[in-house]
Image (cartoon, rainbow, N blue to C red; front, side, top):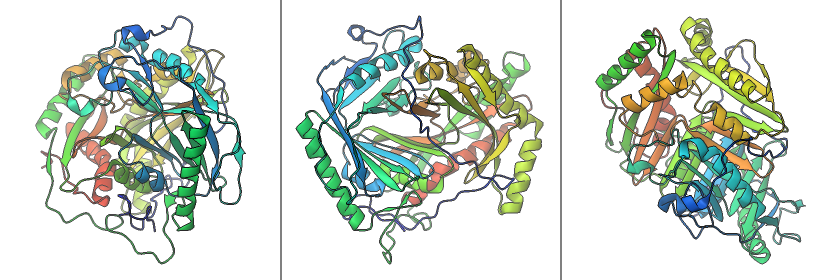
Length: 558
């Protein structure tokens, strides 16, 4: 059972159970973050250095808004960081107490990090020159400049640490955010707070480590004394929360024994009238698929990943933090994320795969493609998984992704290893084919270099990349924005993780726009691909229902 901080906007939570599912062979492939420290690498030779005077990138502190204006605000002011251990608590404590501020949440199974506040940011604004070729290099250059401003706040932090203080004097700043799928955009106000690239350096981070059951608290300030005051405030608040029973149970928030469930979670969807919705209809979808099949039949492409949208206007207001917690509790096998750069304007999602991680000189990626539903019981689920493994169409679709990722890593000089055969990745509502890939990275290659090479891979765009991207630009009548773009985090030691923003929804005002895609290859059927996208809407629609809003279906489903 889970409740959040008393009197909070998020205290509607109810008892939940995580829905982990094994693979067809009984083995569950668990999600993990990189844990080892990696080296920091320079920009690849020949990459372009950015200049703020031309508006290509901006580094700012929280007193400026370059993400909206595109006007550089350069600051060399020092920032101070202090970190240590605190009692395990729910992420809701931090997220709810930070309502009205920029916030974020990132989870892989039982490991999670929540962050709030804004002390610095790196942004590549809309309309920046050469954005298509420079945004990854610009973020790399400017993140290093931002990291260089952060110093450790000397001395021990004041405030409780649950009787077991373990304080670190080191300094490892980390930025959170992401990139748009494509820097070329269609004018759509739903993405106005999400430029081609945007990363935040938070004021506070709270991270749960399942290995020892503890939480790490990182607090930053503009002066050493300010960092100490912030630490004391947050440590005392978290200590009170832990003492009240708002701890972490199996990675989800828990409430005191005997506590009452609170309306909004764990029960049936709201009984409110159906929400107003609109989205891609069946006829439009059919035309998109046949156009893609025409390109494939002519030999111009092997695979094209099309997407469609579903927009929901919930009857009652739905907080982004409520939605991401509901999404996480039902999708422990996925990489769950929330990034809310402006109050109320947020993207949430549950990605089944990673684009790239980097730790200790080793990059890892997963190639995921092919889809089938989860069965009504374990026997049916296992049979469906075997059918997926036996499907020549799905194996070919997944192999496109594997071959492309491996080839691009080798072009960077990496020594690559991969699974010989794919296995089945079983999630809460859907199963996929997955191949794990690992690469030894040579000196001089960073995580953002790898990201620039791999994105967009055939799992989210198609192959050949340029042809598929052209079809998407012409055929999709909406702006993908950050949908299927890389989201994640990067620290000052070069360690990080990025996932594609899949099974996602973006909020603006009271509306939520959901996205789902399907890979079109030779032999694809528009009706079956429609059903696949229906499956991919379910994680977010289910979370909306559980978070107290109305679950609705797309236009044209009949």
